[in-house]
Amino acid sequence: MSGVEGYMYPNEVTLYWSVLIVLYPYITGLVAGAFILASLERVFNVTAVKPTYRLALLTALSFLIVAPLPLQFHLGHPERSPEMYFTPHSTSAMAMFGYVYLWYLMAVLTFEIWLDYRREIVLMSQTSKGLMRVIYKVMTLGSSNISPRALHIDERVSWVVTLVGIPSAFLLHGYVGFIFGSIKANPWWSSPLMPVVFIFSAMVSGIACVMVLYMAVTKLRGKKIDMRCVDTIGMYLFYTFIIDFSLEMLDLIHRIYEADESFRSLDFMVHTKLYFSQIVVQIGLGTVTPLLLLALTQMVRLPEIVRKRMYVVAGALTLIGIFAMRWNVVIGGQLFSKSFLGYTTYKMALVTKEGLLVAVGLTLLPLAILWVLVKLLPPWTDERAPEGAAAD
Amino acid sequence: MKITRRQMLVLLPAAAIAWEHVLAGTPEASPNYTMSEHWWSMLIDIPKCIGCGNCVRACQEENEVPDGFFRTWVERYHVSDEDMTNPVVISPNGGKDGFPPVAKEDAGKYFFVPKLCNHCVDSPCTQVCPVGATFVTPDGVVLVDQKYCLGCAYCVQACPYGCRYIHPQKEVADKCTLCYHRITKGLTTACCEACPTGARQLVDLKNPNDPIHEFLKTHAVQILKPQMATGAKVFYNELDGSVR
Image 1 (cartoon, rainbow over the protein chains, first blue to last red):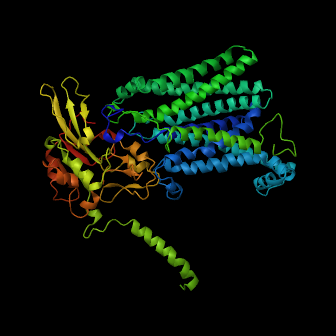
Image 2: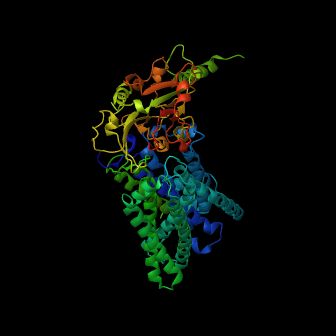
Image 3: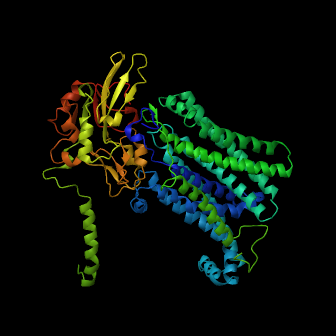
């Protein structure tokens, strides 16, 4: 049979979780990570990262809006997906997705952004014209009181929401890890470490994403990059990445040392079918290289221009590395037979419902949404939207 | 309680919808069949299997199984004396068309292992289904409500035995139903009926007269992957340790 080596159970030859299911944990990871970066400023008072606070929130929202789409495209019957809300199966980890998602979208992220922007929204609803006026009016949700007392209450509530948001972000992505980690039939997935690894890799990818976005957008706007901010983000990225890498290595060492019945099969897979995506891209290019670059920025006093370039390269490589990690988990977990006697091949289609084009489209869609959100709710601290210039 | 005409107008359609749901959950009518009186499973007598593929063909015909997918299949194991834990396994087209002849000079042992859904008591596939579209019936059969299944394939991932697939046309999970439409009418499964040697036997563990009780007492019977603790109910007589 084409693409099959050794023996696969006959129904295992086809892979059912495609590149879109790779995209799903990748996108939710970016959401959780971006939110945790935002919470650094709000809850932990890391003022240096303030210039990215609002951008991080808007980034998280943009990606969160897109997060369920890969799943919808993947489902054989997407029209039945509301059943997950109406008749959830209490023993299914996946059934909780809808609730965790809605909670995070409505009770945490949207609420926090609304509270944070409420003053500006009210002002812009009074000063803008035409359609924008209507949009901002709707966004006020009928609350136009921006007295100092009201704003102080907003501030306090927002703090509480962020506080609730941190465990929620952990829940959102830890839960995605649990979906994989709880499958005892699959030794590549089945691990209690999986949710923890997912949380830390989410933080790594989210922080890297906001860092790269902040630098790129600031450059495009012709403004000066706040190096104190980027240095701080780089430091957090470095330390989070070390924890993430340590956890992944712990998992790897544990597997190698334990060498259970699945080990020979999985080891062979890593050295053959997953060699490029796991050893070369995920570990070499996407983990060790950015870690070394970030370590250099921490240990050696480098000129600003060098640091900037190193951060951009490290950030971009990190994003590629974490994508490769999701790929290796999702696709790698289906390449070997549960008989441990053979391997299949993933053939990615180009233009089908679960093909490459849809995947690329869904990866770019959050950036388009972010562009709209940034136009609507400017996040810049160096140029807070002046009254009357709201729509710009 | 007095119901006004207006209230009646509201209640009637609601009752009609509710009744439709009740009917939708009702199994196909099988007179004289009481689910609670049965606990179905299957016995596979490995030494009796000759790898003819009759069972696979009968299943595919009876259940309109799409090409390339299998509700049941047959594997041929070749276990060499030198490497007992790494057998060479083949199942060309699920064993549907039989197997190529064995070369006489090949050392070691050969045997056939028919596979199907194990209709587990603690089935991981039903555990993970996000909407409960797959379930265990009161008579011990794992089924899929294909009008309710989302086609997410989580159950396919969760099955340790590779027994599930996504039906390419229906785009929902599909698997062995133990010919539920037959066994509830007093018939045996299509695969058991087609087996020329009696290597596959439908078993009702709640029937005190079922010969399985005597068989289990007198034979070394095992289940597949007992370490998975799924409560698999397909029993294998003389199962070799190399079988996965």
